[in-house]
Length: 170
Image 1 (cartoon, rainbow, N blue to C red):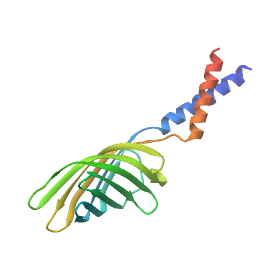
Image 2 (image 1 turned 90 degrees about the vertical axis):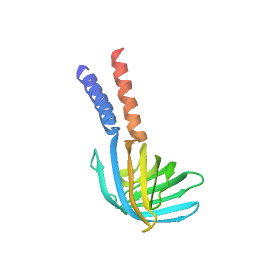
Image 3 (image 1 turned 180 degrees about the horizontal axis):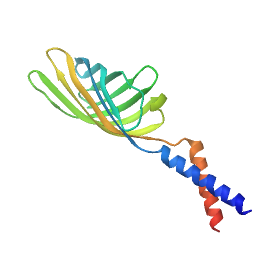
């Protein structure tokens, strides 16, 4: 009986540790460059990722697309490599307009993803600068934290583990 209870507690504790480890936040930084089209109030860009760093191993993303509304100060964007994708909504905090180069920045919130970027939650900041003469977006930079959302089966295992530990304490 002692061996069986110990085994159940060990399994329960292992499930809790596995769930906690899987829910670790990770940082991601992306920089892309490409072309843009500004047909007020709608602004669109198509860019190629030139730098990606992350605190965990993530598949390389290759393309970035953004559509924003300069009046509503909102937009949606996404990165993809054809298999994995990462989409987010963004808010535009403001514009700095210059004679040749303009810039904008704001915040983003994860809205969905596929492959390695599925079942996440997170947010961060973004910024972009544009050369109005060449129609080339100098850089778009996206920085933030993403956290895996535990799937229902993981949460069920966590609940079972807690139940076993509490039952043993009585």
